[in-house]
Every structure is written in C-alpha cells, then in structure tokens.
Image (cartoon, rainbow, N blue to C red; front, top):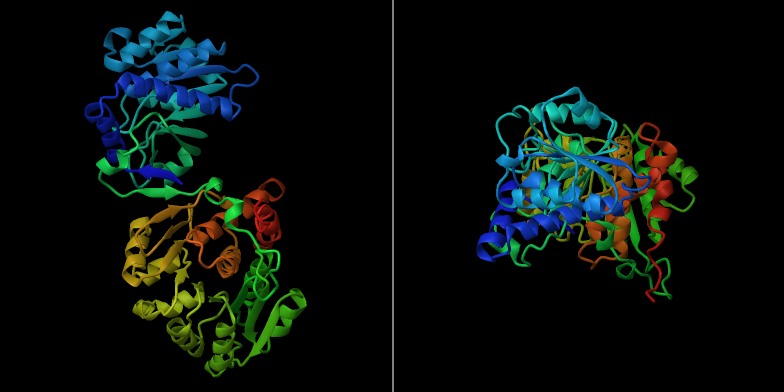
Length: 516
C-alpha cells in the first residue's frame, strides 16, 4: 500500500530526518532528484532523445530540479534549466546542487520572460515542474503564474516534483494557475491532496518514492494516514483455490434484488458474482420478473418470490428470503430493489437477521436512511456501498455538501460497518478507522449498473475468501481493474456495466490457481 500524509506531516517527516536523525538535507535532495530520474527511465519518458526543460523555483523544490538536470546531463539527454532565482539568490542545499549542476555546464537561465525563453518551454518534449513545493498558500505570484501558464500551454509531457505547482491543500485544493501533470513523483510519502479532486486531475499518476527517510518516520508525525492500494498488495498466492473445490465450497452468493423496470440491476449483480468465481449464485426476484433473469443468465439459480402489487418484493416473501440467506456464504441486498414500504420493511428486518457477510447497496441504503442505527444490531460483517448522494442521505446531508473520507470514517466507526464510498476515487473506511483509497478505475465507470456489478464482485470474492482481511479492498481494486481493461476498446463514453462484467475473468485471470 502506498502511504499518503497531510502536507504538514510530510514536512514534519523531512524535518525529523534532518534535525533529529542527522541525515543531511543535501543527501535527501540528491536522493529525491535521483528518484525522479529513475521514474523517467522506468516509465519510458527518455526514449527517442527528448528535449527536457526543468523549471526550478527558489527553494528545495528547485534544488530537486537541479539534481534532475544534472542526472539527465550525465545520461546524455538534452536538458536546460530556467529558474525563478539568480545564482546569487540560491542558498543552502539548493545552492549546493546548483553548483554541481553548473560544473556539468548544463544550460541555465534566470527567468526574464523573453520570447526565446517562452519558445524553449513551449517546444520542449518534457517539462519537469520543480517550481513550488508543499508550503505554498495565498495566491500564485509572479513569475510563477506566468511560468505555470506557459508550461500548461506546451504540448510537452509534464512531470511534477513532489506536487504539481499550485496544489495547496489536503482535500484536493488548488490555486490557479496549477500545473497539469501526467506524472507526479512524491518524495517519501504521497501528499493527500493529490488523491482528491480537483488536485487529483492535475496530478496524473502519483508515485511515492523512497528517498532515505528513517523507517520510523510515521511514528513521529501527527495527522491521519491514508493508504492507496496497488496490484502488489494482492498476490495471487493469497487467492488460491484447492484442487478438490466443488461448486458448493467455491462460494455461494444470495442476491435479493430487482423490481419493475430494474430487473437489469439484479442480473448485472448476479452475472458479476458468477464471473468473479462464485460457485453458485441464487437471485431472488419478484415472481413476475424472475423469468427475465432465467433467460438472460443461464447459470444463475432464480428464486421466484412473492411480490407487491407494483412488482416489488413483498414482505410475505420473508421466510423464503431467510432460507436463501442461511444457505449462502455472502448476501447482496439492494440492486434495483425498489422502495415499496413492504420491501423497505424486509430490508430493515434482514439487516438485523443475516449472519453472513452482507453487501448493502442502492435501494437497501435508502431503507436504512431513516434509521441507520439498526446497523449496530448486525449479527455479522457488513459493507455499505453508497455513492455520494446515497451517503449524504445516510448522514442526513441533503444539500450541496460533498462527503469526505472523514465522513466515511466517522460513519464506519460509529456503526461498526465497512463503507465503500463510490467516487473518483472510491475508498473503503473500515470499522478500525483505516482508510484505503482505490487506485483503479476511470471516468468511463460513471455509467448505470456499474455499482450493481461492484456489489456482485464484492459478495463473490467475500464468499470465497471470507477470512482474508483485505478481501473488500481486493474486490474494489478488481472492479476498477476490469473497467480499465476495457478502456482501449470502449473509451470513456462507450463503456457500459456489462463490459465490466465481461472483463472480470481477465482481471482475475492470475488468481485461483494453487500456489507453486
């Protein structure tokens, strides 16, 4: 997991390393520049002999830029530097590394806003943003505003050092103008602001890199720690299937879903559960709609349950639903369920009855919104999967408020449930207070049914690896990964939920085998 700290905590880590542990700042700066250089190599930025322009500020961020320029020069890459400071204005570690760069005769110029300088920026292949660090506030003053605007006008690929210049807060706040980066290389730990909008869209891919901070750094800083998952967190060896597994031991999922006009939500959830490896999936649908599911998903076992006059699930179906829950290893309730009073009463009852792992989504969340305290009566583990609008209803905020990870954490701890707040990015708050931010997915997932697919994926994987502590984070990751696998063929606008279902086998292809 990648660790993301507040801006203040990141600065405290730096101070602890230098003042308490005695690590020279010049060494950390050298390590930082070298780490950025390594990322440029690893991500293929330096193929085809690009022209690189380093934009350097007065402080330590500019010093990182000098290290990067020196390293590029040693590699034989065409590089030049434009700085907001004259050599006489530099001091400390930045001056040390300027002198090392200068010894290599790297072309250096102090910003004068000349036509020639503007042309060099606009015609660069790569721009390294080493202008401003994590300590900015107020407004972007001259000449930084001019340089940022010119850099953003360039067709160059823009790489930010630590944070894009203009990112200023822990909740994704930015100042204008702000560098539009495609890669941000963050020193030691990520900066929380880069995880959230609008800074998230300005930061591109964010890669925290080791620059030699002490291993106990996190013990000496204050503030919340957020974690972002990545593929290495989910090795295939953790998700294997025994050779003698059969359909009854490979995970049994029971889904309570569907109403008139929304049978598709139920089918998507069931199909996703099957495509995620569940051995058996049963889908409880209102009896007049159940044949639709049978015709669309041959592998789903369909329960025809008693219905209300408007083709929702009736309270008289409760006994059959209880039997299905008892049969299962994990339960989903909510996709397309409808909001008939009898159906809402069923949700309230089953939430307090079901002992199996329970995924609560969509209309089931609506049923809880008047009395979320019944979650405290849950006899088994739960995850709620609201989008922002559904979550606002749960926390009684129906204005234009944008829910935060802090809200998710508070809710999760208060009610003893896991909560997956869907968005860009999605995140999971656990009852222990841990926050995991998802690294997969893209804007194409903003499509009807994507959440129904997610519910099926979670229940399926949870039914198979119930005791795996990271299973919910894994399910969130796989859902986004499956969507990403369709991006090349479907783009952003053409992706639909069934495309995600189709890609699940490929997203999970490496899993399930016995470890070597």
